[in-house]
Image (cartoon, rainbow, N blue to C red; front, side, top):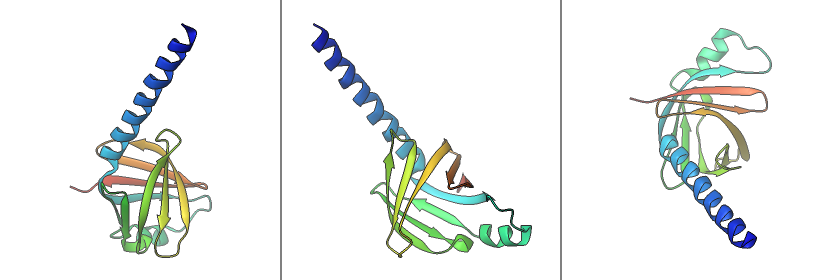
Length: 125
């Protein structure tokens, strides 16, 4: 009996995690305007404004992403890790692999952090 209960718990937990990742992916898949940047070392407003100017990130349903604008041109693939709490990107442009903590994500806003840098995005309308 205990084995059946444990098995049912594992199945239920797997379904919940799968649904959470699916919901996060639905929220992620779109084009995002990069509207905020906080770094561990303060940067002059002029530098931040140049980085933010025209910066966009686009995530597609097939697991690919592109980045353009002041943040630099990049493209590659992405996956979710740690029950949908982390977003891992693998650059095809030689930038390597980055793992972002998803601090917040909704249909309209996303906040990611990595190594003390926080990026705030809003959904492109």
